[in-house]
Length: 311
Image (cartoon, rainbow, N blue to C red; front, top):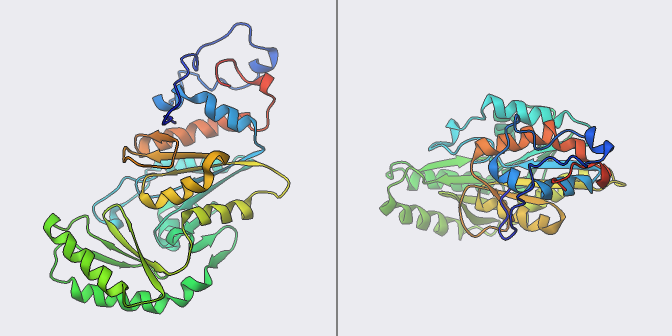
């Protein structure tokens, strides 16, 4: 699952040890070669297992585009593979485990695309949260009219530029320029920057081939993860937060976790706060399957019951 930025791989991660304790024999073999494990997870399995052993439960927060689903040219084309959906559902079904999808998409959109009504969601970078009940940040609600107005103005102003997509997501908006010719991208950026500058209650951020129009409130995916943890984790327990994402907007969540959780960057973009990496959404699915089939069994266990070579 993970490739550390600076740590060295553990060459013994998959070795058996005939001197392992009797307790270890009852623990699932996390390194079973019959189970699909991303190479980078196998190399650093000890990190994950040690963290699981030291915590009572597990909160897994996942970005959608580029993490659960492959990046597509048009936002409406993105879809979660059935095997990935099944892996998310299986993990969420375990006791002492909560799974949340944290996306820049509108909450209703990402919830429909994932198709699992019983897990939690944070949409519009956390300005919308559904963790049992639906909540919207009050400042975001107040900015909806200005967001809608800016979308109309941008749609008109950028109408002559091929490939640009202006997406009104209710409390935020996204201008997609992935399909725009490179020489036209600065025109799109200048138009968006100029219009946003006229509104005090809207701010501009960037992502992968997108410009984001958001309410002028200090709120991001990191704050969303903090809110989800507060709502989902029992007050008297310590759970391990894991965040997996591929975009620059996910960096706020990686920064929030720091040493208190596991941040996993998807892809090879440089300059991330996440200490670990995986290659692509297929590797993310394999991580989720491993956590469900093996990882959760280590939660709150005694270190003496952990197989030699994993912790």
